[in-house]
Amino acid sequence: IACAALDMLATLATGLAIDAYGPISDNAGGIAEMAGMGEDVRERTDALDAAGNTTAAIGKGFAIGSAALVSLALFGAYVVRAKIDMMHSSILDPKVFAGLLYGAMLPYWFSAMTMKSVGKAALAMVEEVRRQFNTIPGLMEGTARPDYKRCVEISTASSLAEMIAPGALVMLSPIFMGALFGTQAL
Image (cartoon, rainbow, N blue to C red; front, side, top):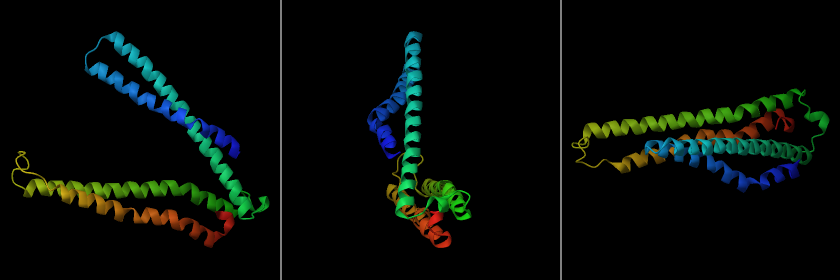
């Protein structure tokens, strides 16, 4: 399994290059349209865009397939290192099933936490911009300079403070699940 995943990842450089082709050809089509170029140019860029979309989809398929194989290989390595026999790693075991559900939920929980954090930071930034427009004379007319330093401070403080909870979730979840349910849940 690990060799199959490695073989799929061996084409990573080509896959990434192909994946970058789609947006480039799509931008070329948009530029041709905005520049008012002829319909023949737009037809060519549309064909290139279709090829770019196809290659991007193929690249994503390779990425998903190799990720699935790598996760399977990592699971196999964990089962061997933790000395879990196959009888105790069955999905029918309640501890294994609970760990599977919790592990499947973690990416969504982490994503929700980070999106909420981004929303809080964006709201703080919007409030600061509003405050500056209301308190700095000439800012709306473009004759005064905004307080960039304060905006950078808000962004930096928010990015550091708001990532504590998602980071703790990632770091403490294996400890919590291992202590609560044992190695089978991990």
